[in-house]
Length: 232
Ligand code: C5J
Image (cartoon, rainbow, N blue to C red):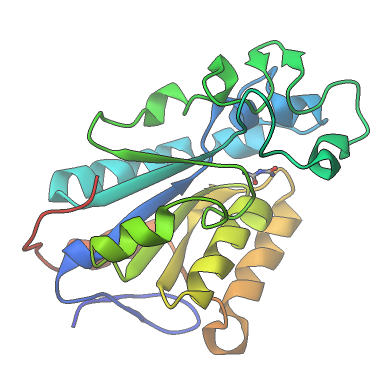
């Protein structure tokens, strides 16, 4: 069985690579571009921009192999029925979710700021899951979609490591998916929180999953061939 050299020990890939999916979390303008919600909250968006080339490399590799790619974006309905008042109140700033910012209404589906950034734009056939929460399994069809395509192994990338990436990985782990986070394809506005999250994930024998470098992830994926059609 092919492996990815990972921590806390090697991550076993399935014999049939159609059982894996690349999960790209929330690489949306709101969080990565100047003027977006991330910057409005006082964060340095260049921290997140630094991983774009690594995520692109994985996206290209998965496309070339015909493997599943699922992107997520955090966003709410324009009438905010799916945004709890507690979430809107957080930050205590001048602008919050649903208010008009430089890229349209903040974290609202369909607004310019809610789009996936240009360099990672999904192809028409690729899936983008809109999620109202931090975890991508909460109030979405992600689990049903993965199970219907017999996907068992999830390779995680995206932002932010300690919030939406970690929340989603924990939800996936509890649902029985084998989860690996690509270390140089995930970022936080706070590098120390990213590092702590990587350590939390792989602590206690991989209590949430595995972490691996981009180089080792690609080497593992290139070891084996696919044999059936992917989702997305
Ligand atoms: C946050 C995310 N940080 N994608 N969202 O609010 O991590």
